[in-house]
Length: 409
Ligand code: 6GU
Image 1: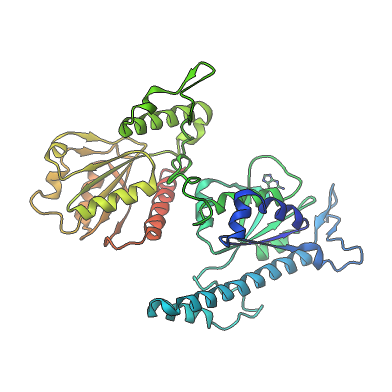
Image 2 (image 1 turned 60 degrees about the horizontal axis):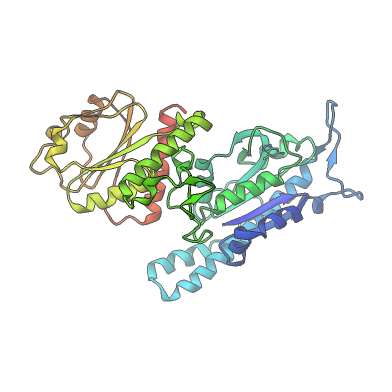
């Protein structure tokens, strides 16, 4: 991940980003932190970049031209770095597969973008570089947006000061407006640092295995369960006995209950965005593997059930409003038990969300059947079993985003 921060205080950014885990990540090349000093683009002898607001009122406003020049400089550096990275990868790939090599060579060989064509042109991955303005007048950063931003190769961050920035340059350059909370700071730098910290945690290589939890409660819109380490008793307080049993099923269940109870108590507003995930799979072993993998990327809790089993088929299942059914059907899995028969005891409430993944054919009939049974179909996808971890991740993020959206939250 490459960051380009347009700011009046580059030292502040480098100070924060040069410390601890982020400093290590930069040293090891997993992230790069670049700054553009907006003051370098002042046209005044005083080097000032602010002026009085039209219409009067308190405070100063940052002028459009120096901000525009700074953002353009950031975008140009981003483009140069992207090219350098592509040729480096192409060089590295000479010994790798020919297909990959051809793709990378193609990217590296793309003609340089002129400044005039930038607006229409996008990055080699087909997207425009995101230019994020840090401001309290925006949607508050959350974990879903953090994960989405972490999928970018580069981000340009614009930090304002004084009362704000002339609206016209924002209209012309900014793609995203982000706040870090409902309070006002003296400038955008701390917001930019917060965003970069949260995003960098999702960049592969930044966290070591012992620093990252595979999937965090926050991604489930739940707070973390409480943690304990040695000694077993401290100041007369004992570690909850369940944690000493070694029974992983029980421990996971306890942690889930703790996470929900804690969220209820401290952040009840989060609970309405939380879903309990139930994954039902049937068909061959490959379906189970895919189900386990996808489930684990959508939620750290919930259950995975084998619907090949007659016992399950016979017992009644009703999923509620805040439950999400992930339905994974293996290739050629219709076999001996017809679909309608297999799910004759499965019901939703009418609001229960469902997503169908199929290794074979996704028929209208199956979708209609689920809709009839009280499920709201979020969407569907196909899988081949040859998906990369990144593709599964992307699908998981999409399902979570759609679930929040469809539930109207
Ligand atoms: Cl990102 N910037 C400023 N100046 N104030 C804020 C903020 C950002 N987020 C919350 N308050």
